Amino acid sequence: MAGIYSNLVINHRHRGVAMVGDLPRRLVAEAIGTMLLVLFGAGSVVAALVMQNGRLDYAALGIISFSFAVVVALVIYAFGSTSGAHINPAVTIALAAGRRFPWSEVPFYIVAQLVGAFAGGLLIVGGFGRRAVDNGVGLTALGQGVSYGQGILLEGLGTFLLLLTIMALAVDRRAPSGWAGWMIGLAVACEIFVLGPLTGGSVNPARTFGPYLTTTVFGGSAPWWQYGVYIAGPIIGAVLAVVVYDLVARPMRELPVTAEQGTAGEIIGARGQDLPEAAQGAAGDIPTARRPHDDRIRDRVGHIGRRRWRPGHGG
Image 1 (cartoon, rainbow, N blue to C red):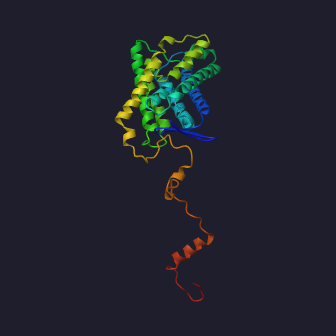
Image 2: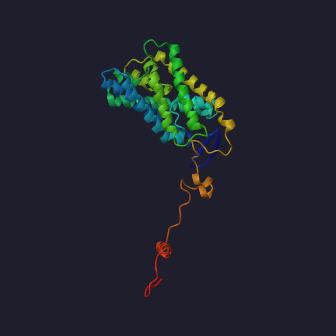
Image 3: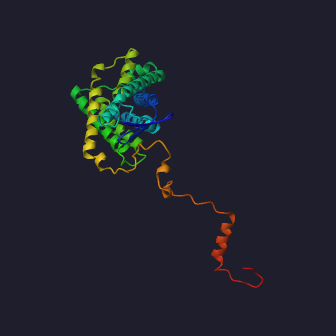
């Protein structure tokens, strides 16, 4: 990863992905983002279980999916330009495997994400009390009749969809700007619609880790033996999505050198500095201000042909 270092800002760029900030600041962003994901994502599961006396129907699953979509989108818009807003170890590993993130920083990102997930679980317990622990702090588990192998397959497919969306809208320079956050959030909601009844639709080792650890710390029962499903499935699906996207969409082969940056954007420097003068702003150059007598001159010229001269009246 090439870096441009200054006393104030570090601009990290690796094959089209731009991040600004030193490593500690980016790790804080990852921790906060993952904390919010667990708090308002897994927290919505606890809220639904409390409201429905420990039961979840498909309508409640829709509300949970929407909550995940919103918090993912907001975290991306808040921290995407700082850390990339991975908030998911599978995303970090997959981007590194695709040479879009440095392997040397992967362990630090994963630790920050796991710490943030645990903090999110603690906040859920802080808000709901013992009821959160009794409901597993919104943990994910294999549904009835779902085998270990099926769980890995399903989590892999869900993460494949997630990474395909990330590659298309947040990494590829050809992507339309402004859509990444909402579309990635909706991709998370989409996979929960399908995988929720079967695996919980985690697609994120950190999202599962936080509630598992919090439940265990407060004396609850967490199915740690299933955690391998939520590690292997997401990582395999994420890496496969990056490989497939690079082979099929070929963003590196078909992209002109001077193409506009995608939703990741160039962070350092004013955007207008790199554009021709005529292209400044969305509506072009702002016209100079009119002087007060300009309107009078225009009205005089516009009406001179309709006015008839009469004796005693000036032109």
